View 1 (tube, rainbow, N blue to C red):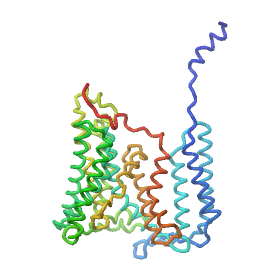
View 2 (cartoon, helix red, strand yellow; view 1 turned 180 degrees about the vertical axis):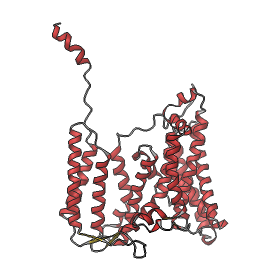
View 3 (cartoon, rainbow, N blue to C red; view 1 turned 30 degrees about the vertical axis):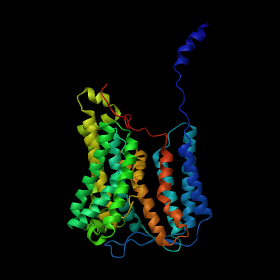
Length: 427
């Protein structure tokens, strides 16, 4: 071996391989950006749209902002294309694409779509945003239950059952007792009881967590259908007429344009959601209890060695998560429509799980992801009212299409807690 070879051998052994190029996000952003530019810009509509920022009775009235959908589509689509091109360049250089790029492209697409649908009329932003928050409440609370459960190591597929059971109990108890607060408490207890069944089979009897969750969804769906057909349906005035929680308007703050009615003119369930999200974040990341919970989801054996009873902690943590999901179920009945309807959870539990993944098992990010899905539902309602020339079946698909696209965007890029879904037994 030559001297030169000897000198270069150690250096060669320390060569760090380049990270692989990740094209998923840049490609998705490019497709959405081009659609925005072409569909809403080049092929857009010329009828003006008025973006309404406040109501005529508000303390501060902001005049509407007129816009031509085609021009708005061209401008926002052009910005989105530039951001997508930047993302492609970052991917080519093997660098990370920041989340802000996805937000810019998504906002450009949604704003252009909203202007296109509202062409020739008005876009009532307070209505759209207020309904976004209201329709997101159940999903956000379900997502918080999912975050807590998976952080402690249990896959809570049964969120759908907890939402449905909570919705049913809230309507029934509120109607019978005449107290909506009693209905809220009953809904939370129902969610906790369903969680306890999940925990008992998954933790104590080591049954597959996904299978238990799916069975619970089928069971709760069947039971609520039976009781609705035999009790709530025939005697609706007695057992299914709970009404809705009153809106609690906060003086002065509710008069702020746009954000006032969104944040400060809501029902109790929504205000509780505003409190629960930061509370979950604080407990998980700023307290010893949260440290233990996260340790159980990452390395339960290490937690066991320091004296933590892994399965007991998992059992009661999942039960507490069920309390929150049950409250989300109450938000769908006494916090929204005022009555129970068969299968009214309508997949919101699964959308909440998607929000957990999209939010990287972080309560704040999961709540923001849930708001995205809530916006999709609010947009569907507004589109129907605006009389848009879009097939109704396509409009009904909006929340689920958004869910699929969002999860696809992050698939393979997020890592769940390492021990999630894995039962723990002392070896």
